[in-house]
Image (cartoon, rainbow, N blue to C red; front, side, top):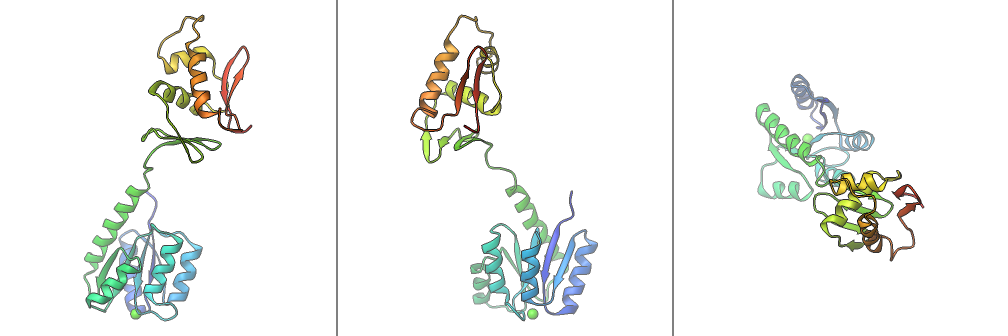
Length: 230
Ligand code: CA
């Protein structure tokens, strides 16, 4: 696994250096900034897996910095690090978009645990929610079974969906009727049957008819092709 990159923004150099050392020993790559302005600069220039932010900082304070970071990257986990210990400060921290909060002085182990929890959570987020096939403005979500052209929802029967899925997976490639028969119907059709052409027409009526740009094309004597580009 790649080394996880952490941005640490803390103006008390002793604390910053001690944290950096501890986290480095634990296998993280840490970049430290001693004020908010430099922290913001580093954040804009690099991609971090997690941010540890002090609240009272010269330059830009932790709350404002956290808001800016949130606007730029909604997913990066942020842990606020502070000596302040009132409920209002915590609320302001969460309002500015922090994921967790740790009060100084703290046990290094506690910070490590919070980092692990947050990194685990974001690595799960990176798994795509659904597999989506795209061709032009046509989108097919293989998990939710939703099909759209632009904003228009297209309702397909199960077989039409399978046929379109097969064409999409082979987009920009001519597929023969027997390719379709084997892959979509799971059988070798009698070459005289026109069931495939009938289904292609059903799908065309739903996917192409109302739209200027046609995606599904007939390749005479060879089969069909779904084209990304006109
Ligand atoms: Ca401080």
